[in-house]
Image 1 (tube, rainbow, N blue to C red):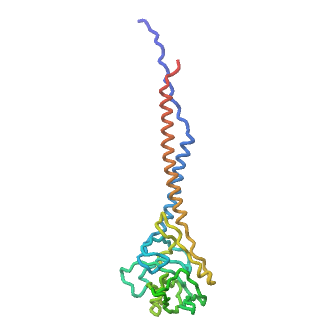
Image 2: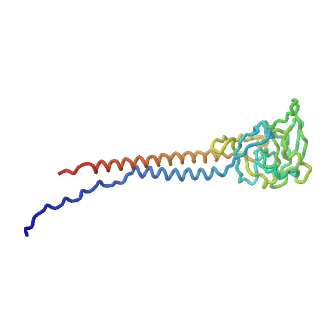
Image 3: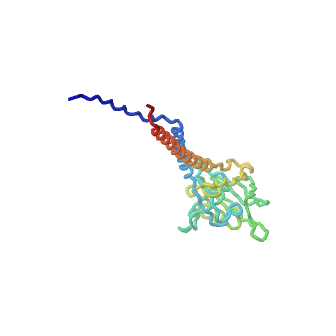
Length: 266
């Protein structure tokens, strides 16, 4: 038998090498950061709640049907002048289906609240308070006042509506058990915004009580805006990262296909 020499088969041609892509890493990192940022913003935003105001007791500050944003305050005492969401079950004549309502705090635990001076102003601990947000007109051009004097018990607030002649509030229950004061356990939150969670503007806070010489700064909570911005920023980063990842992977795959299609040099 004659041995025939055959040429050795050509060596396998190595395919194009996969190279580390810094751009791909950046895009993936953007998406991961976006998930973290948006997730944190979403979680903190969920500590705020929305409620629609059903009645006109807070006119002219809040129109009926207005959606307000509220959040429970960690403060030991809710500041005077704050608008709060409370359970109507705090009042002696409450019915099971009464639900919730928003009112303005004009006295906190320990305060002596009296209505009214000769200038038709309430006094808190002897200091007259000018309330530019209050409307006392009875519709005929006169101002109507319900006189009262109350010592607010500890861990409670005394609340009134800005529409003073048409509001179910603490004044109606002075002389009854509790003197109309609302226990803090019946206060569900402090109103901090007007509008839905994703579009609310800060709720106007009054400095009337501070200007009267009473201690306690107004509520300053605009955290919902920061949380909302984090949600939008996070969503934008995720979209940018995902699109960038897809484009980068597609371009890399295209380069490898083109490199593989080039015939080997002889």
